[in-house]
Amino acid sequence: MPSTVRAKSGELTSRRRLVILAICCTAVVMANLDTTALNVALPAISRELHTSVAGAQWTIDAYTVVLACLLTFSGSLADRIGRKPVFQLGLAVFAVGSLACSLAPSLGVLVGFRMVQAVGGSMMNPVAMAIIATAFTDPGQRVRAIGVWSGAIGISMAAGPVVGGFLVDAVGWEAVFWINVPIALVALALTALLVPDSKSRTPRAFDPVGQLLVAGVLGLLVFAIIEGPHRGWDSPVTVGCFAGAALSLAALLWYEPRHAQPLIDVRAFRSPLFSGALAISVLAYAAMGGFLFLNTFYLQEIRGDRPLHAGLELLPMAAALCVFGPLSGRMVAARGARTALTTGALLATVAAVILGVTFDSSGTLTLLIGYALFGAGIGLINTPITATAVAGLPQAQAGVAASLATTSRQVGQSLGVAVIGSIIASQHDALRSAAAFHAPATHSWMTIAGMTIAAFVVARVCTGRWAREVLAVPVGPRGPRPEVPPPVSRPMAFAPAR
Image (cartoon, rainbow, N blue to C red; front, side, top):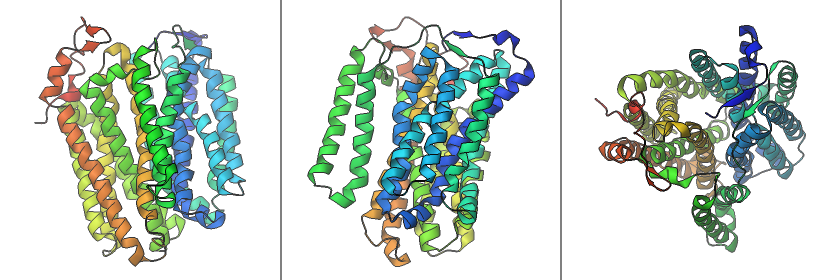
C-alpha cells in the first residue's frame, strides 16, 4: 500500500477510530444492501413500470456495470485529491441517485439514475477501505478493522432479501431506495466531522483511454447479451455490440502495456495464480448473480410468494454465505486456498444440479436445503479470492490485486444477470406459468452449474504444481524479475489439498 499523508492521524483516539470504522461499514452496507434488496423488488418494479425481463436485467446491471468500470478510477482519484472529499462526494451522489430512483416514472429514468447511484457507490467501496487502513495504523488493529468491514458486507448480503421483501410488502418498491437517503445523509455529516483526510504520496496517473476501453468491453458485451433475445442474436445491433466488445478488448490488450501507469497492467495476468483468482471470481459471482435473478422471479411469479416470504426463503442462502465465509478464512490458513476454492465450487455445483432437477417438483424444505448448500459454496469461494490474487503478485502490487479482485466480482454479477435473464427471456411467456417456466429455468440451473464447474477446474489448475513452478520465476515488464517469489507467509494461497 502506498505511503500516505494523514491529517492529524496521531491525534485519533480509539473511540474516534471506531466511529470512523462504523461510518465506513455503514456506507458499504448501504451500497451492498441496495443491490441484494433490490433483487426481491424486481417483480414489483416490472409490474408497476410495465417492463420486460430485459428491463429487470437493466435495473440490476446498470448499477453493476458502471460500478465495475469505475472502481479503479475512483480509487485513483481518491489517492490523488484526497479520500475524504471523494468519499463524501460518493455518499452525496448515492443519496441523490437513490432519491431519484424512488421517484422514477419509467424504466428508462430508473436505469439512468441507477447509473448515478453506481457512480456514488464506486467512490464508497474502495475509498472506505483506504480510510480504514489510514485510520488504523497499528497492523493488528488494522487487520481486525478490515475483518469487521468484510463482515459488514456479509451481513448486508444476508439482510438484503429480508429487508427488501419487508419494504416492498409494507410500503412499495420505492422504499428500497428511500431508505438509503437518511443513512447517507447521517454518514455524510459524521464524515465531515470525524474522518481525517489523507492521500497518496505517489498517486497513479489517470488512464482515460484505458478507462474508456474497459467500459467498452463490459458495456457492449452486457448490452449484447441482454438485448440478444429481443433484437435477435443475428441482428446488426447485437452482432455489432459483440464485435465492438471484442475490438475494445483487443485495443485494451494492445494499449495498456504501452501506458506508463496503466489502469489495468495486463502483464500481471502472466501470473496463473492471479489470473485464476480473477477468473474464479467472475465465474462464482456470475453464478451468484444469476441465482438471485432466477429465484427472485421463480419465488414470486411462479410460486406466488409475497416479497417478504420470498426474502425469508432466500435467507438460508445468505446465512450460509455469511457463516462459511469466516470458516473459509480458517480453512485457508490451515490447508491453503485450494481446499476452500474447490470445496466451495463442488458444493455450489451440487446445489445447482439438485435445484435444477427438483425446483418445481419438491417441497419447500428441499428448496431451502439447496439454497443453503449454494450459499455455503459461494461463501467458501469468496474469502480466498482476494488472498489468492494477492499471493499471485509481488507484495508491492497487493493493492492492485485486491482492487481487481473486487472489480471482477462486479463483472461476474453483471454477466450472470445478463446470461440467466436472457435464457429466461428467450421464451417470451416464461413467467406466465410453471409449465412455461420449466424449460428456461432448467437451462438456467444447468448454466449456473456450468459456471461453478468451470470455477472448480480453474481452481485446480491455477493452484496446482504448474502454477507454483511459474511463480518460482516471476516475470516483470522487462523480463525475469530479480526479486524473490512471494514470501513464505503467503504460499498458503496455493497449498495443495491434503
